[in-house]
Image (cartoon, rainbow, N blue to C red):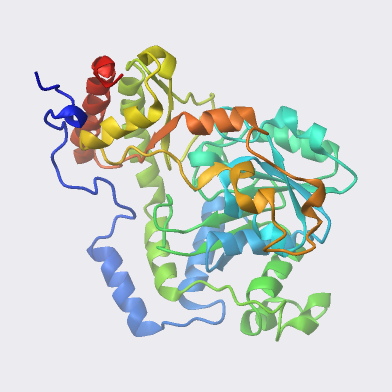
Length: 417
């Protein structure tokens, strides 16, 4: 007899054509703003027009003194590290599990990323930072993975006790907060992405936040030579003499991306509130499914719900491999269920195992990584299934179909063994 499971010949739970999730939401208001920007300017070399409007909006939203836009989140991280004074040979402690751009710009500065074990949620484990500190340690970089804020109270305490610079990668966590304080405001500087699927999106782009004037001037020097450097770095500042060339890089955002991000920023809190409603619904339903565990949020922690992560428990389903469970989800038409790929434990990546071919003579030689070095992060990554989180009330029907697909597979898992 034919199984009810689509992977084994049954009818799929979801028949609507994909993709079932797209971001950012584009409407006539967005289109009008883009069209207006096309008429106004497609190049903004100074801090004016839509770039100034976006940066002013970001400063107000995050409650910081300075926001500087860049061409990408990776560029923002690169600029942030340089502006923080990270120099050759310095060590920066970073979470072992994150998207590689959290740490890879350090190679270009000839600094050393030092990977730190994470908790099961992928965020850096505050209790494992201290053991990695050496006389070369300069900073701690935190990622708020999938939009869930890291434990900043303990991390800031460790960094402060050892005179380490506190930096944040908020690329998944726009608008997330801890006890009312926005992610991205806990340290010297933070970097964010405006890449396509991020909670705040311009399609491409990024930005750096800081309250420190010197750090701000250094970000401008690094990423915005000539016009911006001339107008924003005071004449008495030592960096002012380098205004024409800066550090030799131009990393400015495209005005069209800035127009989209500016439009989305005005809607961000509404989107986050709507995502939170659907996340509550999904978590309450998915938590009842044998074989899946939801991620709990501590009191006072407000995530951005960039992704809703589930821990797969093969032991509950007779040892059914996650690959088989995931393939069954896709066959049911639940194609947005995803297993993290490039956002993975970085000790598994060739760049962190053997950087020499790309960066000859890099001082990374005393930090050699291999698979198995970070068992918590690696186990969690290997057992994670995630979903994007919808934001509209009409998306609840689709969310329910995704739940039904997971229930169906859990209920009939023995047929897949």
